[in-house]
Image (cartoon, rainbow, N blue to C red):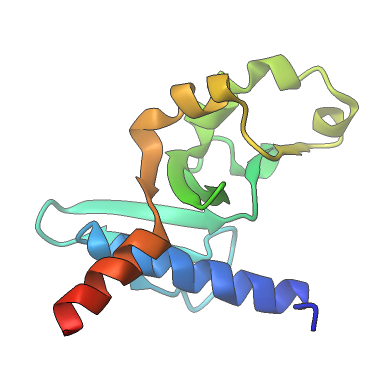
Length: 137
């Protein structure tokens, strides 16, 4: 059975929430989605991230200057990065036809991309699940 795009989004959101909980964040769903799919809050540090969930690395003109973080998986690892920082790192793609229409995405990440985004590597759901299984006995 092939999952619908809506089902894939639910699976991805749950995977991200799993990783976020392991990083000390709680997840909140906004009542109205105006480009923010969920809000991650780490109460211990006060860090709040307004998150747009994507299936791959994506930049979009409508997110510029809005303090939005883009969460996306790549090769089993989740990244949560500030959109405007991704835009800066992805400047080499802003001359493309896709960007001329307002958005650009790519998958999988190159080795250079992974190195540039290393600070925004958020975690792996599989390792979190394995750790939880060990704790559950």
